[in-house]
Length: 175
Image (cartoon, rainbow, N blue to C red; front, top):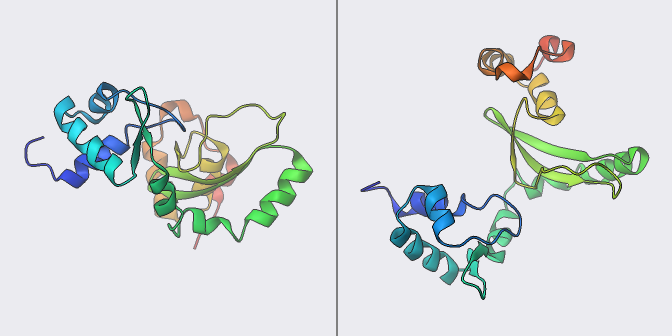
């Protein structure tokens, strides 16, 4: 990793956190980021200094509140939620099911909002989490309305476990 920009390494350390509220001992983000422990220690300390990470009493690191402040400004993320949220609430109230809002980013869906009923089956989707387009119904719905070239590319790159295309995904037209 010699010569890799520090910002790229810092984002690799941040990307090592995969569960909400997850506290990680230093060796875990180092291993997940593929960085030496000493490098991870320096980066984690700098990220903690600016509030992007927080250090717990036991020495573990968690994602800091400052990242939420910054990410709430993303127009394709939390800013996107305002318009559909009242309709999502109506649908949630009527169905009592999980209601998801996601945006397509390449060959993945990024979850921007989720409403869940207390008695609904548990899901591992988290806000900001990425799902393969074939990993959930929301991904297939996004793919069905993607431009034709995206659908065509996905037909050739989808995992074998994805099964056959549902009829609406084969025939849906998009601008």
